[in-house]
Length: 521
Image (cartoon, rainbow, N blue to C red; front, side):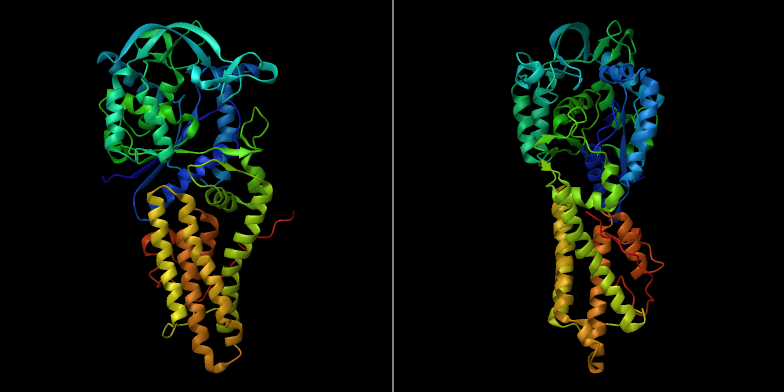
């Protein structure tokens, strides 16, 4: 079997319901996966939930329930429905409480223990329950408000806990030189470049061995250490392994061969070190290849702060999709924010872009073109005659849009891929304005020219349907069904989108509902 293009999201903590920051990550990974599928490649998207650890346990107890009941409820009522809300086409959803994951984690741990990469030792440090991580002094800041005079986690703004434990440790320090060599040999392993530079600097400063267990005397919500059931596995060591446990590492070598190494692992920049330092070291210790790329995207900001439920800045995805639809949600967050950079969300910006770009730009282009074909040619696609310079310009822009978008996707620049595609929207709108088909229709001697203009516009719109299919799957499916009835949009390879033969002469166009209805203020 051939290798599939394997994309993963982080698996998300189920201590609360998802907000649009989580959805942003999901959509980005989904767009990348769909894009490669549209190329005709095998593609596979994994997402899921991280359900162990002290933070989940405390949240469950705080809600007067046990952690299994709490995670079952949140996964069923919030996390799985999220995928439908934002139209995610994932091939697998892994929960770390599943038996397939737990047994594989124990197998992995035992292998590293047997080969000498795990030992028992003592440790004292500053522990952030929110991050489920020991913090270096450089990761802490001075507290404010209720925490004045205390050192707090820079991410969660809450005090760390002083812990002294005897645990099992992974020999992370042994992989400093191997990691640096890997980064050198694979310059795109960590992206964007700013993230790569940060990680390289961190590793060069020196690595300490990693505590990978917690005593059950402290808490017991986790996977047992296989050789010592008085300890459970550190939640991050458990969670990171989902990428290979779901891929069949422990029990399905044929499946594993088609998926691993992962092609892109999409993560938020706040968990980049786990994925770009600890994770590849774990894989190296087990004799496995690291993923081909780890991409650390930026944060969604609201009021200048990272989105957070605890700070009351979390916005539920359905608050947006209920008004604007899932396609607009996907388009807005992929287009408005440079992928890899932080970006601010505002309702005003979303509303303005929705109406200017989707309703008036793309949606109106499609609806008025189809309306003119219906009006002037009884809804039948007319044949084009010889193309003028203006027509050839549209073809050239379409080809450049496809080429530019493809290049951008290979660099994981989703926003740039959409921008390159959008040049064709602008070109077609300008083309129709200049060519004035409504004027041509009044002169019977210019009927061939009218046919050529509308055929050119339809061909350009078909190109856009293919280019935007990974981003706006619902709208493009409706549009393609209207201009190419009976044809399968998913079967059109994105690299052939500008071949100018997708819309067949003589085809009776289908009905097209309004793709992006106006939304009241």
